[in-house]
Length: 188
Image (cartoon, rainbow, N blue to C red; front, side, top):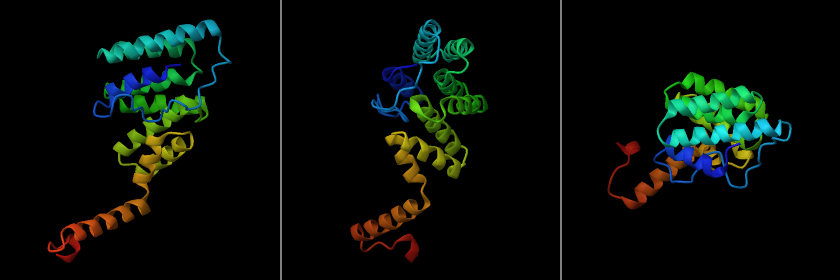
C-alpha cells in the first residue's frame, strides 16, 4: 500500500494547482487498508512496485508508472491500492475509460472502505464531475466523506443543489450590500 507521503506526491503530480500534501480522499488518520489476507512476501514486492510507480510518475514517466502498477496488480490482483494508483496514471495518459475501469475495480475490491476505497471514490467522483454526471459524483463524494475525506465533504456540499441555491442567494445579498447603487442581474 502506498503511504500518505506517496499519495501526496501523486496528488501534486495529478493536481499541480492543489497545495502540496493536500491529498483528496486521504487524511493522515484515514482507516488503513487491511492487507492481512495477502502473502507477506508478495505484499512487500507489491508495495515496492507501487513506490517505484510513484517515483516514475513523480519524474514524469507515466508509462513506467502504469507498468509498475500493472505488475503489482498481476502479483496481487485482489488488492485495491494498485488499481487506484494505476487509475490516476491512466488518467494522466488521457485514458479516462481505463481509469474508470480501475477505479470500479478498486472500489469493488476494497468494499468502498479503507484508504484505497476512499481515494477511489474521490477519484471516480472527480472524473464523473468532469463528465457532467454531477449526481453520481455527489453520491461518490458523500460516500468518501463518510470515510473521513474533508475534500469529498467539500465537493459533496458544492454539488448539493440546495447549498448551491443558498450560496447564489447569499452572493446576491452580499453584492447588493457592497454595491447598493449597482443593479443586480435580477433587476436588469
